[in-house]
Image 1 (cartoon, rainbow, N blue to C red):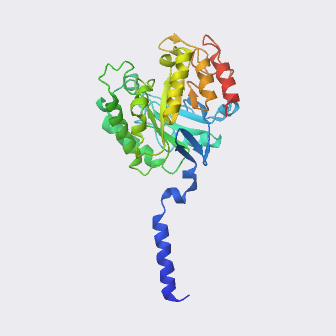
Image 2: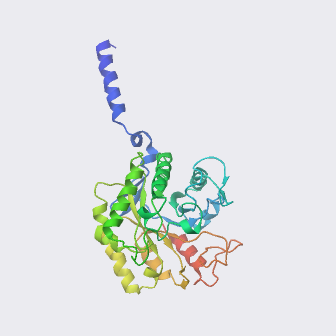
Image 3: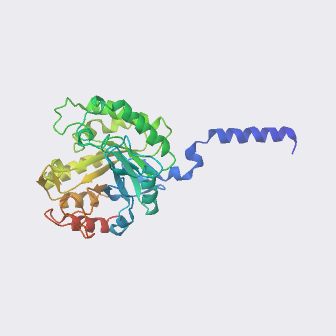
Length: 334
C-alpha cells in the first residue's frame, strides 16, 4: 500500500474508533432499553415478573426459576458496608453480607435481571430509607458517593439496574414534600449515576413511600426530557389495594395514556398491619403486560408477605393465599 493511502486509512480508523462509545463496543450494553412505556430486550418488548429478594444475606436464586421469575429486586439494607466485590464480610451489626457482584453473577446464571436497591444506609432500623426526606438525611453526601461507586462498577453490565432510593418521603406528605422537591432530588440522583458513564436502566421511585403515582401524572413526562433508560417504580399497598376495582382501572389507564415506563416494584397482601387482597390489581396489570415484583421471596410462613413456607411450598397462611396467588400469576405471565 502506498504510504499516503496507508496514512489516510490509519486516520480513518482512528476516527472510527474515537467515535465509538463503550455501548457501541460492548453489545451486552445494548440488551435492555426503555422505549416509550416499554422495557425492551434486544429491541423487543418484554414483561418482567419477579420478586424482592434477600440475597445480600445468602446468595442463591436458582429456586426462583421454577416460578417463572425473570427479575430480582435486591434488598440492600447496609449500603454503606455491603461489599461490591469479593468474599462475604461481617458488618458492624454482626451480619454476614455477600458482595453485590456475587449476587448479580448468581442471578445472571439463572437468567434473572438484578435491580440493586438501597433499602438502608447502615443496616439499622433507624436508617432505613423508607419515608425519609433524602436530602435531609445525615448521610446524604456519603450516600451519593456510594451510589457513584455502584454505578461505576456496574456500568458495563446491562442486566444490572440501579434504583436510586427506596420509598422516599413520608406517606402523608407531612414532611413538607412537593412534586418540585421530588423532581429536584431525583434529578440529582439520576445525575450521580449518569456521571459515571452508566447508561443502564435506572429506577426512579415515586413519592409517599413509593405509593403515589400522581407525581408522574404531574411531572413524570417532564422529568424524562433529555434522559434515557428511566423506569418509574410504584409500590402497591393500601393506597392501591384498598381502592375500588373501578378506580384501580382508571388509575392504571391514566398511567398507560401518559406513556411513561412503570414498574410495580412491590406488591404484597399486608402493609402496616392491614390485610389486603392483591388479586384484582395483579390481574389488571398482568393483562396490560406491565412489569411487577412481589414482596417477598422468603421461606417463612410466619411472615404473611413471604411467598414460601419453610418447606418451600407457597405460603398461604393468613394472607389471602398470597403464595399460591402469586405463583399462579407468575406461571402464566410473559
